[in-house]
Image 1 (spheres, rainbow, N blue to C red):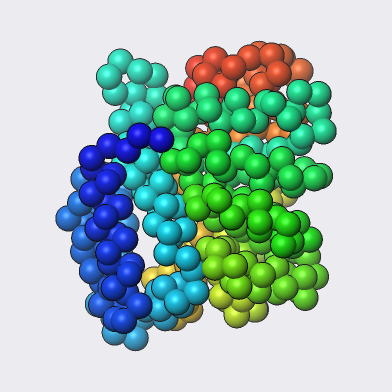
Image 2 (image 1 turned 180 degrees about the vertical axis):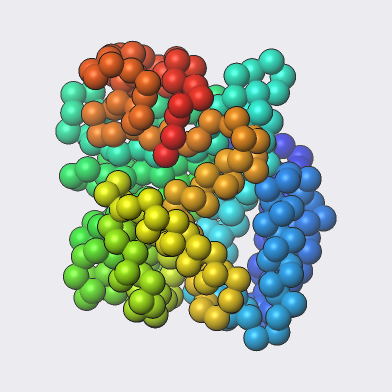
Length: 339
């Protein structure tokens, strides 16, 4: 992977700040945000960093506790590589791609892939797909294994400057799995919270011991259990960096709206040392910020390789990865790609 000069400068600056942060984590957190604002020109990054900068003016902000915990318990190289890949490679460079600059068609800034290696040709489909995505300029990937998670664990090294979020069930987070990811510093593991609480807690402990950055992930069918507050308090005790919430397909729109408003209030209150994220609404917000209202949303493919939400007749092979390349599918579906 060849790195441009801007990335090298960002890496050197962030690495130095992370190393110094062990001795003065609160000051290091503020310095990282200030340096980020000085180094970035992207509208998304500047807006987000300005918001964080404003939050950190509150001396009792719980995000200071989150930063202290992350600096002490997460491998700094993993924080660096995942963060720079997401913020710089995907969002900063992605702004031009999402807007279709330089005569190119706009492309999504992320792919959401349900990975099923049991289908014919699946073992070779996904590495080739990720390489094609990177060549198009896509560098953020949400990977959801169907069945054996081994195929997903092997994918992050395929695109070294990509940011990979692996949505894994707790039983998949074994010592063997962590060893398989040992050489991939560009990974954030999201532990599914719907499993037995003891299993979720054990998976988080394993990730923490191995110094991985991780999140906890919930699919919500109704808003009431989340709005009651127990969801936040129980999962925050597991020391994740993020709490991911995703409204299920059968979640009523009004309740999905209430969930997003709740997530926004939690972030603004800064009373819990974890960052709550609405996977659908926040990703849509980032997409609009990067490429404007007409930017294509992240494209999601199901386990059979078909594009979800494609404007096609049922079974149309033109929207399936076994019959067409990613670029061709995205061009045919634009602007209907959606997460």
